[in-house]
Length: 458
Image (cartoon, rainbow, N blue to C red; front, side, top):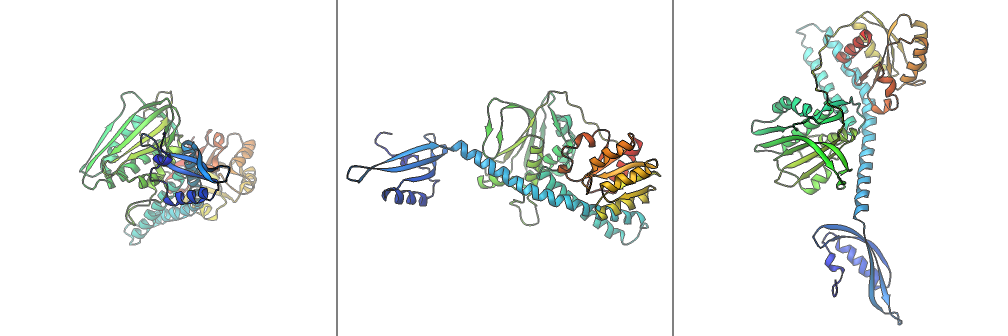
């Protein structure tokens, strides 16, 4: 450094205007405070906070400048992480709130269209219209689930599973999704990789990544999915993804697509950000992946350069328990019944369609518009009521409070909770999952009938 000045640290990243303001201040005898994005000897960039003061002689003439500098790269990275988390949380809160109310509207649309379809004779020319209504409602429900997944307010059903089973189980689905000119390679670890996760949510992540990879490969290529274990002795990552030290299950997804510019890579997890043409993407695919992995207590990072494809690394907390092998779920026949069901729901549209569906399939419905009314109705009719279908959030009493009250009347009461927002059930998991059923909104006719039958037969 002897005989040189701090100019050797310049990287070209600091705007020229900042230097002009600096010199204007110190040449006029003032002290300047600011930041530089400078360069180390090895070429790596770092952030620097500086205070530069003029040094004057006895006559008041500036003879030197003294600079006190501090490397603030780490605090900058933490600040960027905080701002990113706050941004995601703010959008997530908005998305979750919209989805919460929208689920009740969708329940009515999906339910009434299903009833119409059941009652219409075969060959009716309007059947096509009803089918289109159902398809549109399903797409809307999918978007709602996506918003909740992004905002990390989607209800998830976790259990100990083998990550190898997830990638092997979705192999056929991915083969149907990709084009013939794209090669799919799945390389699971020889040993089991046990994680506590929701299988459906992890499959959604792989589907979203695969869809994006296919869009990035115009003239074919390959997708490679591997599983393994990562032992991190020190922190890993940058402002985009900070991984704490520990032992993780590692799911790696690599493609040979077009890759991303750095500016695109930094924004890829932002909701509604997309580089696709209008109408060809919602910009929610990677945002959903981000939300799902975060909700599982994990981390997702991406390394990509133009022309060199993209590699996503997903870190999930590793558990010690031997993973369960996934068994295909048994498809139960859709049947009704003759039992009496208490339905407590404060949204009139949702109450109306639930009542109509259950009545259509032989059940007797006793309605209650809020929690207090539900307890009063149950007290008067508990001997004839076979099941209570309770909304988690209601005026005057929440569903879990209703459950506690009616259990004082009848300890053997059967209860099925319903909600579409995980924030609704926070702190109530012990009641909802302890011997009681749960159904997510928007309610679909097949799910309602199946869950109701399961709860009654339990």
